[in-house]
Image 1 (cartoon, rainbow, N blue to C red):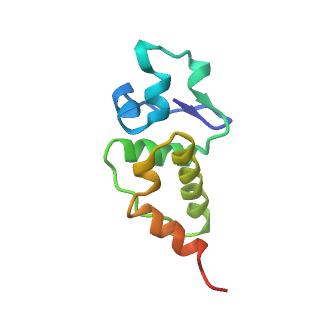
Image 2 (image 1 turned 30 degrees about the vertical axis):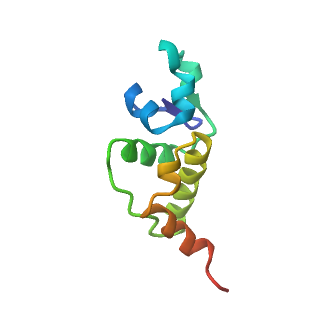
Length: 106
């Protein structure tokens, strides 16, 4: 998988993608082997893609620590919605971190 305008490469196993994402499960069904261009998502935030791959392989997400990292986590949430990764969208550690910043009373 390649993310961002720089097309940064992220190595993932097909099984990891298809077991967590209905989007990839449908897309990679029946032994479809995508071309590099099909696996390139220039509109994805590279840091969000890195967080996604970390999460795919069981890594913990600790939530944003500042506004800059909040942007990456928000991009990760959008990525999770795009690729239909419900478990990530509803991740207990991830969602409250975003919700607490979005729902601040001014």
